[in-house]
Picture (cartoon, rainbow over the protein chains, first blue to last red):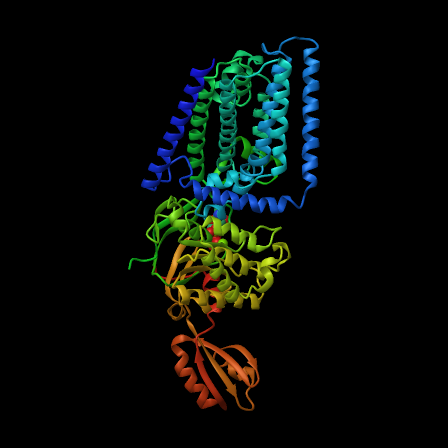
Length: 302
Length: 331
Ligand SMILES: Nc1ncnc2c1ncn2[C@@H]1O[C@H](COP(=O)(O)OP(=O)(O)O)[C@@H](O)[C@H]1O
Ligand SMILES: [Mg+2]
């Protein structure tokens, strides 16, 4: 632990940033639609700002949502902790994790839930319906990256309270563990958590893209919920086959288990880089699925 | 200058799941789905010059919207080629999208709970319009469309006509040279329809925009476009001037008469098909080639105060043509 690793991670981070930048610039020169990132960060920020401003104007009419959201979160965390307590009254470990370690994971889970509820569900979560009723038509007519636009068009700001509460819970559990993370562990956690958000996003994109094939599927987000449910517990708690599935195929191990492990020191900080790699791969794959899906868009008649 | 829009043997086929009615049908569709090809657009070829305004006519389900969506890059053609403003619309990317406006009469981009101006601001960001340009264009659109104080009212409080005017404004803030309008007057009352027609005429005169417009209100097309494309069951049946179309497909002429005393409907019926009779006015329909001789006979036999020979109204011609399954040569 310590100096050397911090620098290593920092260096890698910078190199990744630099590489990304070059990809963007090259994409720009060729004017190709294929570059993964939004080509002009400035315009993306401008559009997002305008979208979210619009959103906020709508949301502010419903301040009660904030209270409801916070209450809902407390209730959810309470139930989850209770379930854990019941389990741990019979056992001392869950998949090799002790109680407060699992609570750290629960905190991470809740923080990601916040991201999902604030951005993904109200944004790309509505895609299936729009593929059915042709609501996507006007988005496709605009000079924007349709995937990015559809994904980040909404920010249900109150639900971000989940992110704060989740991280607070993780912090408290860490304190109960008596573990003070090193800088490297914190950096790895931050990277793994950001990667987790990207992985979750990629899962949404891939699942929602199914709507282009199975137009009549009403509620694809249920499918996501079912899969994401698996991220509530450390993957080591699952049987071998499922573990393989969650690490390599439906990468939900990377959403909670890995960030939590990076934070508690269960895994070495280098795992953060692996997480970033997984996130990059997932994002690229989801992009491919999206592009294939869009070709199949038929809209609705009329 | 190259054409603004070209379509070359453009086709679109939808695969549609066939489902028999009832629970049994639903079950069978689930287990062993059957598909049917719907040929929405077949081998359509045309070119539109910059600055032209062209009406796209055809009965419901003819393939107008599908064609428009392929031109706008929303749908991927099954076969054939499209070029719009020098781009292949599918994959034309932002540079292409900035050059077009797409207005769909049954889709809405305005945010329902907020005033239209909020959506305009969003489009300002999307199209990267500088503030002074935005102010100037908005003022112009407000004047041309007579938007007045509509911009501050929540969209849900606007009438259908007011909403469509705001939709047009939102779609034209980036001042695109090519407009695709699908049923922009759908469901509007006559005054609102006229306002929108007037606006489109003015907009095109000012900016030389190319406009392709579908509508099933014939007045929209006759008032705006001198050239029409007629499509039926996915096939292009006619491409040319509106007036020439009438000459080609209508086999009749109308003789409009103002009669002096003592002529009855029965007497007139001897000369041709009496379409209207409200003394002293009457309208006869006769075969095209007989129009001149019948007129001469009428003038000789009856006390006629006035007589004129007209083409039947375009609406009637086209409606009759669609009803009877049009017989037109390939354009
Ligand atoms: N998304 C779709 N899926 C299946 N069939 C469609 C779809 N869109 C249009 N069609 C069919 O294609 C034909 C042409 O439709 P459309 O282009 O909407 O006609 P129009 O706009 O001239 O009324 C119709 O038979 C319609 O049912
Ligand atoms: Mg239509």
